[in-house]
Length: 138
Image (cartoon, rainbow, N blue to C red; front, side, top):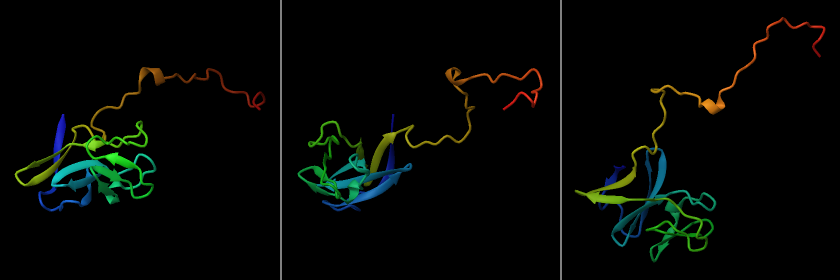
């Protein structure tokens, strides 16, 4: 299930510009390309550069550090088909730009539920039955 978070008013980001926004502890690069909004992870999967500081050419983000390219729509990289950046859905409703994230994304454990150790990780520590003779130890 997607949860849409308000990030700014429609019109605050002019066409051809980008903004780096934080949504639930995630940095997201928001672009206004020809009047339509696109959102991708701000971290370049190549070397971690901020994609929000890159430029756009023909619907492709160009990373500011090493010129790697990523599609605004799919996040795919034409230089390396196995490399992809995360794309977030964007909605504009009643003059507000909202970015969609998974409802569980960005949530932190705060200790409300009991943290059980999986059975596969449980082990027993043997209990020493007799006192250790200090003369026998190394």
